[in-house]
Length: 363
Ligand code: ADE
Ligand code: ZN
Image (cartoon, rainbow, N blue to C red; front, side, top):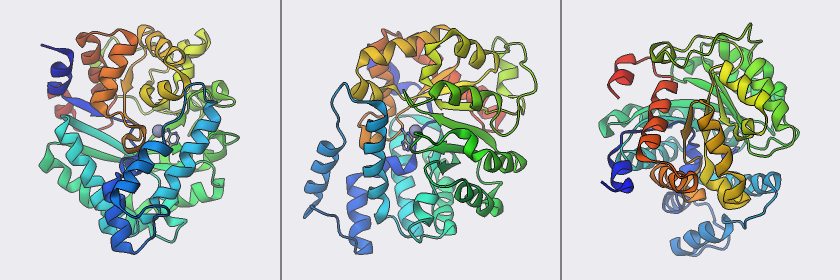
């Protein structure tokens, strides 16, 4: 069997996926038309599609901070077409269908409510649209959970406020994450919001994006301090899959999104491994912008160190690579076999936050 046939039939999980990063040109065009919003420089869907291709592809050798900031500027501006419950529902349903077509059976997806409430959209509008799609995901053989993300270049007060607004939905959201521009926006800025999220019983995760300023300190803080200090390091428990199926409710984060700079020092590799944290890597977008030689060796190093990692598409509408394309691209870049790709998906289901243990065992 070819590697691409193997990947196509492999049941998959995706745990680093921004739902707003799945907003296709087609959906954006429909929302803009329905909501009477102008798309500058676009007289047709074809114009808009061309913008996706030209604006979002960067050259190798880019500075990582600049790349992230430029990407985020375009990314947040594109969301202005999302206004109604149906807009959020349709965007999410579009991706659920993509997930089904790629045999993605388990999905934890981020959403950025502040990107919408700051434009006057009600938090409830966002939530109700996303929850309606979540209910229907089962019809497509996809188990879906929502991870609320704080937009870290907004204020600490705004971050805390959005978590407070989510209180009526606390049983319908699985975790709190942290995304957007990391430059001078350390995870410690949002400690109060993360403490509140823990009190809701949510899991905790945060982006430690690639090659950002103070990334090593951010990784350490997320592992040791986010949502409260981790009391002590337990013996590494990955060898016992059953224990990992039921991760202990620790303080510090439960996961790191990206965290690729863990590969830079033995201290960080040991720290992340000892804390039994998984990393949700998204190598394909970054290898395009930073160069494959700056990305794939780090993925290999983390994987070989025995840290559980998953491979994800991040923002597939913009970064082009799908979940399937990511698995195949990383297999090529890191010289991996079908067995390795199977291991990545096994890690992913072990790291999954569902309380449906039977689903995990049968996966
Ligand atoms: N929001 C969407 N994609 C992101 C990324 N790669 N990093 C930080 N925030 C994001
Ligand atoms: Zn991300």
